[in-house]
Image (cartoon, rainbow, N blue to C red; front, side):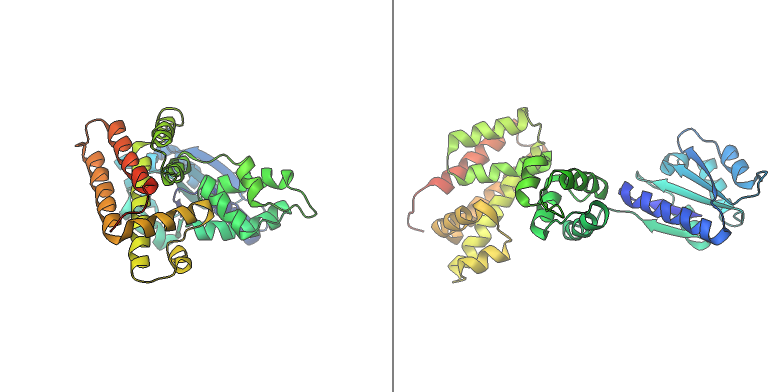
Length: 327
């Protein structure tokens, strides 16, 4: 028995392929594959398939998709727990779950007689490194690390989505082999809602209050960016300004500050300039205000969420656009 557990469907598909190939190598012929949906399958149907013999006597590979739905029923869960004690030698049962898996006893039994394989999305750095290797191996293309990082920023660390985007980019890229640059990623891969939410930081840094409000409303009403994403983007800007101002006050060079905060792109200069102008104390007060607003939104104390977000964004824009003044 094998449990493929986690939200990354690409990894699940790859592990299932490896299982199938391993069975073929072990038995000298491909396993006969049977697939069931966890939602509508009964325990009796599943066990009958596992325990019955086919005319050709080949090894069986029995796959249950949406296994979290199957084990929600207590009789199903207990039946599989019992099965882990004496699984069939002539069949391999693979449970696949990307949802809310709540069967710790069954999982322990599976680990004892087979394997539990984690299939979670990688962190962004690992996903970017994967893109570099995947582009060359699967798509015959070259993608530099900065372009791979930008691609992960755009679509997230889902390997299935990244692989699909790499295929499209490889076809569109120029060169022999095709070379996928940052500009091509930005022109062909639309930003996710989460990334769109971070656009507000660049607008706030211009100090233009009117534009800040207009863009905030567009992100909410047109792009449907969640309030919490916008709130966290504003909080993160307050954090960057506070940390940058604190380090600059301590005599740290701007280059080192930018590196420590992982600042890059056109926002680097405005963040450092605004932080230097604000100074540590004013930046700290601004950051505290951003945190208080975020808490108010999360606890429902903010009243009108749109007005609350607009108020915070305008205050940050005013601070970014204000000319130098005594600290």
